[in-house]
Image (cartoon, rainbow, N blue to C red; front, top):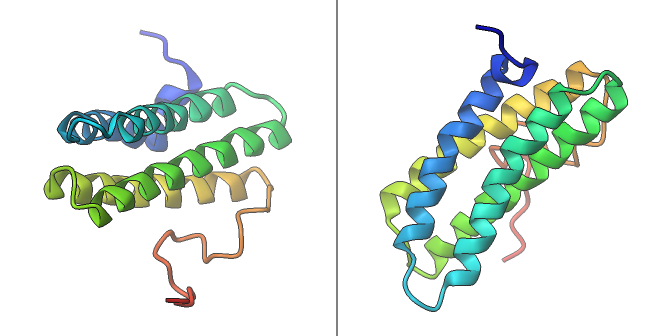
Length: 137
């Protein structure tokens, strides 16, 4: 069976693996937190869609642009999980599982962006691990 380019990317598969985790987290949020649920669904889906769009591009610049958008959606998803943890809402195991998948997705996307010759991945280390981060609390 023929496949699309994006289906062969490991990062695409890991991003797909994050979708049911995001759905579980969103589904476990209490009433009154629909805004977080909706935002998590949109951000998680955006990761997958931007990876697919980037893989379908011929221009390295456009590939990099879509992969960087996927990176932003991954960090947005991670921030939503952080909000849930801070507010003590959602299942802790799902939140941690989602975080681990997002760390993998982010690191893979950094490598993809670099492989197409695009910079602009931010001032971090690109590992998604927070190394080199200062604590302003």
